[in-house]
Amino acid sequence: MKVLVVGGGGREHAVVRKLAQSPRVGSIVVAPGNAGIAREADSSGKAIECVAIGATDIAALVEYARNNAVDYAVVTPDDPLVMGAVDAFAEAGIPAFGPSKAAAQLEGSKTFAKKFMARNQIPTAAYETFDDPRAALEYVAQADLPIVVKADGLALGKGVTIALTREEAENAVREAMLDRRFGESGARVVIEEFLTGPEVTVLAFTDGKTLVPMVSSMDHKRLNDGDQGPNTGGMGTIAPNPLYTPEIAARCMAEIFLPTVRGMAADGVPFRGCLYFGLILTTTGPKVIEYNCRFGDPEAQVVLPLLRSDLLDIMEATTAGTLADTAVDFAPDAAACIVMSAEGYPVAPRKGDEITIPADIYQSVYVAGAADRNGTLVTNGGRVLNVTATAADLKTALAEAYRKVAAIDFVGAHYRTDIGARALEENA
Image (tube, rainbow, N blue to C red; front, top):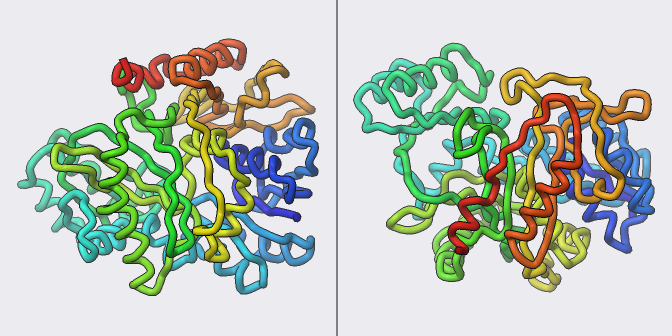
């Protein structure tokens, strides 16, 4: 089969590498891909190429797929999913992995998601929605602190502010609604109560009827050690999350996962693809912080290496509605991912610095923000590399991941040294 993967980051590199393991995959095209993904053919033995088509240029993606005998498309970034890429492929007769435009509203609109959860009694933070900036400012002027201000639409993971002070809350509202820092995504804001407790991410495959959770994970959002510094797209992950016990998993399945799938189906917008549950474990039980309509990044980089089943088989089953009859098996091991970012990230990352990765560890590295300059990898984004390792236990996986990080070099490389530390304490 010829598979088209839409996207160009570390998550897509992880998806491509796992798909290349399928005996049914003959070739993979990635649009737009990146310089690291372009090198994957050298080690996978499969024909893998990148084409210069943007992930949101849906018309061009569909035209390419039609003209180049693509058998199956995998849409992984949020923007094209929310824009209706899967619908467009389907209309062209090309089956695709991912939710429809209507179902992707679970991520594309926080207001949609909040109303959906309220309607289906799915536990989440109390909230109010505002279209009028004056009303939003009046609300935060008297609300209990801390408080959470969220741009309603997609904002590259940067549209959420946890305001500890009244001034921070007011600034967040002004930036979103008046300054339009996030464009039209901030025209409406959702203001939530602040919940406390450890966070857990659970990705799940679903075909709109059946839902199969993947291995749980723990993300580390802050830039610096000790959860200090600005929020980022994620500086590292571990899997499984030791705080996600079998008892909590059972409760999440009964109170959150299945009600979500059943609620979407009942609304006539069944969710097919990968459904991301961002959870917080409060003293009164697990609650939903957010839904995403695709693999997390960098959560996919620790979850997919543990998948023992054929990823293409699973993806096709979510599209065809046959997930209940498809094997989804994960290794009982642990995985760790350390993100190496460029100097200046997340505000103004520097670019163009040469990256040196020893050949013997390249298969443990997912390239996120890199370009090719005369045959040499150079930095070309904020989060540059995702360095991973798997082992029988988390302590060993982390030690191996950090050993590999130490062998990689580029000017200004930044990474946290405490990824997984909290999880190790929980296991102690």
